[in-house]
Image (cartoon, rainbow, N blue to C red; front, side):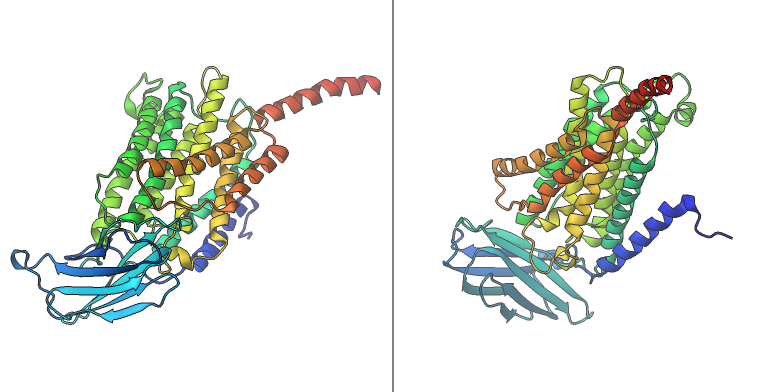
Length: 469
């Protein structure tokens, strides 16, 4: 009996890759959340610059006491303050009553990591609050004069980071599987897509992906400067608006060609099935994310399973919808397909922003292997490049799509500056490598139009060769 059949090689390959990624991603638990203990960090003076001395004060308060009174009895507190190019400051806080810590030190350039450990002696529970402030390397003032401290929710233990890592491993497996499918599955211009719809679907999808990408980078910058969050923030609204545009496009596909009952229409129409999948993503993802935050509080890592589900559910939806067939494949349509694919890679790159922003040493991204960032970036770039060759009848379709991604990525900086963000991502040199991958795909992988042209040339040469013989 043959256990590993030839047609199941892709499945077994994916399982092996998943196992390897999971092993590399195992790490300690990460603290999440909010509780009834809050705090405030202040600077004096608030506009100090690198090289100057500043007094930092942290005052912790308990909000769930009777009538809002402060009650930190039976609590042990200690604080660690890591200063760039300076000695780490460690000091015990008051064991009860108003807990306040003040320390004067010389600030440096970069991220100042503040950790407050809280141990309730009566229950033995120990929580950790992470906080930080950044001093810009260009000799600008401190980012934020007042910032808040948070703790894991009382009675809820932090979930293990392995869940984040399993989610990331699944993304890697899905990406590798897509590469295999797009590279090996035979196709032609006649059957390259199972979707039929109006061109407005593409016109909606292009700005939607750009908005989600820009909103995602803005959101990471927002949380880097202000760790606590609410549901309604400008960054979330920008992301939601992009998702709404995708939902409108999916609804247009769902209604297309409907002449029977909805059940029959969805059962027999591939476009309707895909559209229904697209419509369900936020309906599942939004409640899942809310439940997750209720249980674990504010995420200390972007790789939380609900974020992965929403991000890559949206990317999958866009990859499906960019293949939609329209009546006339005009130059404008091709341009919009390029913009969409560039936006898909831009949105996928949000998953990697933890390796681009100046997060502190305790962050989960610091414990990931060196190959994670370029590895995931290469996977996403290959998926987008191969899809570009499938749906865009242009010789350099993959290169144009990835160049669009790089243009979006560069535009992140003026956007963040325009909205007043001072913590911005780095621009790793490895990003330029995505363009090399696209160029290689354009050079060695033939798209539908190129294959059709080559077949026509073969058919033309064949009779001539027979006549000569």
